[in-house]
Each structure stands twice: as C-alpha cells, then as structure tokens.
Length: 256
Ligand code: G3P
Ligand code: MG
Image (tube, rainbow, N blue to C red; front, top):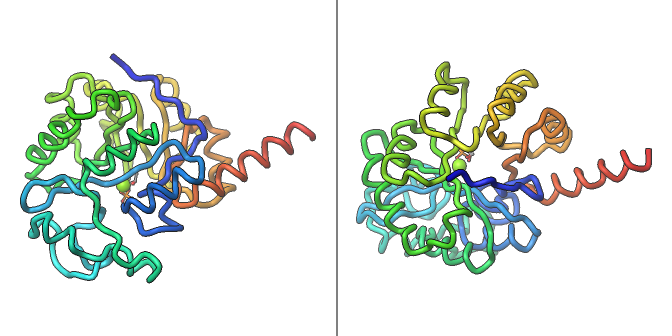
C-alpha cells in the first residue's frame, strides 16, 4: 500500500519550528502546530537503555547542559538534562523527548511527521526494531508517518520489518545508485539537500512519481525556485515565513 501524502502547506518544520524554539523538543513541535504547519521532521536516536529519543547530534554538547555521547546515557539520565537553555534561557528545563511523547502529540494534533532515523553505523537494527515496536501502539498514525534515513542499511531494515511503511530516501550528495535503491525500497519520496538540487534532477525524480522534498531551506527566493521546479515541500526552520512568502507571491501572480 502506498500512502499518497499531501504537503499542504508545502513545508515541513525542520526539527520542529527550530528558529523559534530549541530543536527537537516538544515546545518546537507545539510551535509548529501553532504556526499552522501540518508536518514536522525530527531525528530519532537511541539512549543506552534502548529508548528511542528525539535528538540530532551524536554528542550532547551543543544542545544540552551535559557533555559526552548521547548513547552512553540511559534515558532516565538524558531526561534530567536541560535541552532548552542553550537556545534561550526562556526555554530552560526543556526536555529531550522520547519518541512516544511525540507520537502522542502528533496523534492529538492530527499532524504528520518525517521520522529521520539517525542510527550509528552497525547499530541500525536495534534502533529500527525499537522504533517500529513503539509505532505499533499508534495504528491510526501509520498513514501520518514517513521514515527516512541517510543510512541505506536502516532503510532496508525498515522495509524488511515493516513492508507497508512509507520510506523516503535521504540524500546529502548524489548517490549514483539512488534510483535503484528507491525502486528496491519502494520509496514514496526522495529528500534531497537543496544545495545539490537542479531542475534536471527534480524533473527526473518527479517523472518517477516520487514526492520530492528538499532540506534545509530558510531563504524564500530559493524555496520559490524549488517549488517552480516541482518540489513538493521544503524542510525549513522558519516554515511560517516560507508559507507567508509563498502566499504573497501567489496573490501577486494572480493580480499581475
Ligand atoms: O531530514 C532532513 C534533514 O533533517 C537532514 O539533515 O542533519 O538536519 O538531520 P539533518
Ligand atoms: Mg533531520
């Protein structure tokens, strides 16, 4: 079964509304909802105890008040950290969320998510299995979740363990066999670093019937160019500004 995702408005709040609140925290996801954004993106890693957690870096240093490897700490310790003050003291005490907390939120707000699997090399299987096991508790959300990963191994594990899940191939650089991987995995989407995107590549991806998403786009002019190439949605830290600019541009085109 292929889920026909709709990206309306055509933006995905990257790590939540991460220009306005600390990335990958509940407050960043709530902010995205408040801005009228339907899709959020977040990164999933694994705590030492196996708990899937929402976090981007391998190290705690940049976005918490602790140093060291994220995966060295059980979630009970990670949960006690301050994941907000680094961004602004207004967000002091913000927690590193567990995946299940975000799923409850998505279900309540009827939102959609791109769940990016950030597995360490060689540790893909435990993370993928645990994420899929947790998702069993949210059957009605199955059509609201789009998985992606830079790790092709993680994507193959997702497909093997969840034949019906929606997958997106995530490309930082052009992988020569991207089309073959996409076909083998029956990906519904391709998520491309906007810096390598071209009109030609966009036309190719769209001709394959895939949704095309580009990250991370905070510049309105670039977003408009990408939309004109057929890009279905952009990941943005300022999703509201992209939507406002897009609407303004559309009304100007109507008048003109
Ligand atoms: O999934 C799109 C984007 O989030 C990939 O890059 O490093 O922000 O996770 P990164
Ligand atoms: Mg990400």
